[in-house]
Length: 92
Image (cartoon, rainbow, N blue to C red; front, side, top):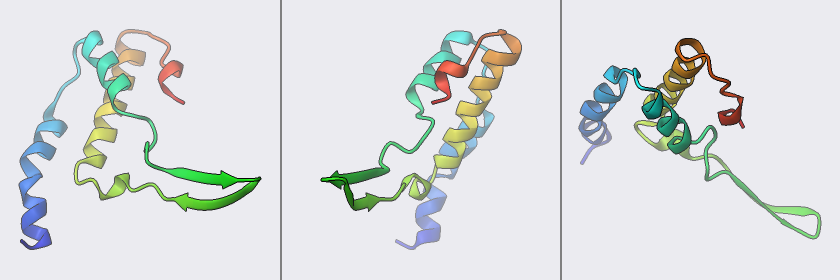
């Protein structure tokens, strides 16, 4: 299967994520908890004060990474702008 064909399989999910509207505070809180602010796979392995291995963030290889980050951003904006909540808890 070619790369273009493989990426086309993800297009319906990408379109659905882009169309998803945040109108419920509970949903917004869930999305902010479930979608991490940073790539959870980026790691540094240290031994005796020296960095042995640095594993780069590979989240950008995920075909829906951009849509998930936009969805998390929209949820944060909804909570801050529409609900007047402090979202600093989710920004770490």
